[in-house]
Length: 111
Image (tube, rainbow, N blue to C red):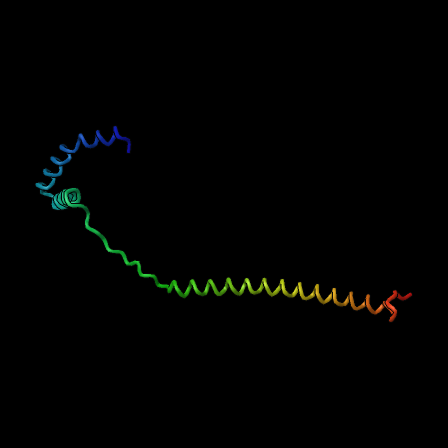
């Protein structure tokens, strides 16, 4: 709130208090209750309200499940990498074996 407006509102505080005082003397019970409520709220603060923040989920268990899922995903990625590496090694071994079969007993390449 701009400081100018805040000061202007504070300047009307005495008049507002007079209005509340008059409203508390009103014949209308609703007006008296509202005025009294406003006076008490401003003088002592609004009553506190309790809020139930109890979690319905066991956060420890949920966190553990998330970690397990992440580990399984990583294992899957690692397994895929290992399978690719194994496949490459097998192909290299087969290529080397095929090449060695083409070399004769004297160590020279065949026809």
